[in-house]
Length: 152
Image 1 (cartoon, rainbow, N blue to C red):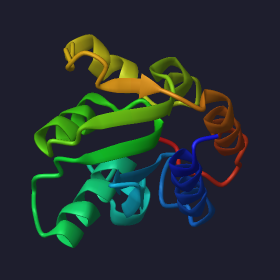
Image 2 (spheres, one colour):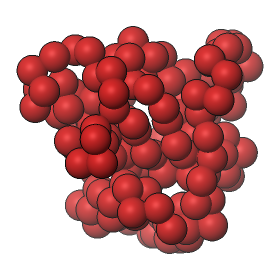
Image 3 (cartoon, helix red, strand yellow):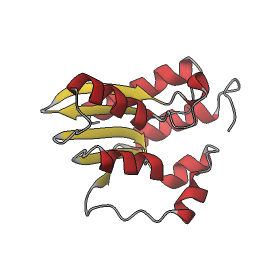
Image 4 (spheres, rainbow, N blue to C red):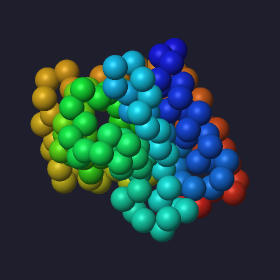
């Protein structure tokens, strides 16, 4: 398993444990160094935009004192929704690696499929790449089987 995806998974677990939101964690890396991690905090913050990728982008921008994250790579447990995909592009992140697919996200009860039908995102070639789906799916099943999660 990719070491940075493992960090994203562990960050997602932290959020799940604290009932902050869904099983979405992200890790931003520059020059092989972790710049920021984030997880879904929609429930905690009562902010529907506080997805794992957005949380990590906000932290990385603050740490680097720049809105331009050129040279950074983002690892995330789930395929970015249209909002997060656009945020990655706006932040100039070089590459995005994700674990679970849009169909996996639908399976655990999120409604991103509606957004994908409305917004047809044409990302740069090879910008999004799937890795470590099996490990991320374990995280998703763990989340799906929780009895105390907040439903969406």
